Image (cartoon, rainbow, N blue to C red):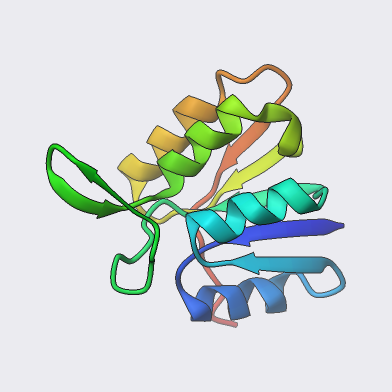
Length: 125
């Protein structure tokens, strides 16, 4: 299975690699990397985080509240505008409950998408 992961946390990427061994993983840390990957490859599953750290994220926008990082909701809006570029199965793994719900709400409006919200966690075993 080909899986594209969006997260700004290097340790989470390592966790996904451990949890999903045997699958082909592509890692993106920013909005631009994620969109670029979807524009150049086909995936079976995408995994989305909401919060993308502004310190390490060159993808920013100026809105009425100031400069902010493009986040998982911005990715969901891009997917909504380009649904054919994204696979049917989408996992929202954000630990931010409000952000995760915001992403899911956007994506669930797209016909044919299977959206699951499951906050990231790694077993302590």
